[in-house]
Length: 337
Ligand SMILES: C[S@@+](CC[C@H](N)C(=O)[O-])C[C@H]1O[C@@H](n2cnc3c(N)ncnc32)[C@H](O)[C@@H]1O
Image (cartoon, rainbow, N blue to C red; front, side):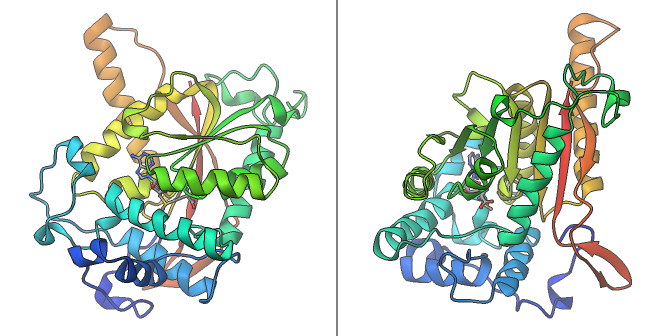
């Protein structure tokens, strides 16, 4: 959960479950795992959404992996060694490939859309909030100077169809469908799992959104050479961070994403594994790293920070745990300079 970390032994919400490689191998086991950990959408749910929300947040937040594990990035494609598996299988492509293969079969057989991470309510909140954020951005917005943000004298840029939107780690692509309903029309979803992209394409066509583009792409070694006005991430940085080599991958993530957002564009991250403040700190570290690299390259007088905090969702319900208030999920928008 964002804001408060729950040690597994203190959590009464989800009995701790030790994961094994067998979870990855057997489809039956895998779907049991998915049932236990993830949030099924209302399109295909047989289990209480709130419990799924709790379970998914717990799993994504609970990724603890061997501190000594040192993986090459290329090893992401490999199967896990049983000794390395704890709650970190969501950091591996093999997990997602198996997950979406089952979701795709379920779609073809029953028409189910699969899972909505963090639940339908969070997805709707993210879509509505992002729409309002974009609609309130002044025309001719200068990311380096946020003093004109949300001022009444500036005319807001209401035409959402001109915003080029990318959803990284799109899964079944339902967030993009929600954004399409809000008025965005230049939409693209990427995911490194082919099954996810297949599922997302099928759903978009079935649900009347054939104009949404989908592409198999690993955000950490992206093939995309164009930039976007808005980059959305719901649960993808969380998943990336659950790989045993998560810290390194997160560094690569920021480098990669900074190339995908136009100057003056937005990065909107929804996470249950990091608080807003933790994301801010991570961005600050990335900015500093970039400054240092630029200073080395060009001498003093480097460019402003790459990303800076713009706003966050304030409406997620908060709960108390151990005397501390927090919400399970946070959504934060960063501006690209
Ligand atoms: C927690 S799920 C979230 C899916 C979707 N964004 C949603 O909110 O329903 C994480 C997604 O990130 C994808 N993913 C993880 N690492 C990725 C990477 N390096 N490049 C692209 N997609 C990735 C997974 O395949 C999975 O679809």
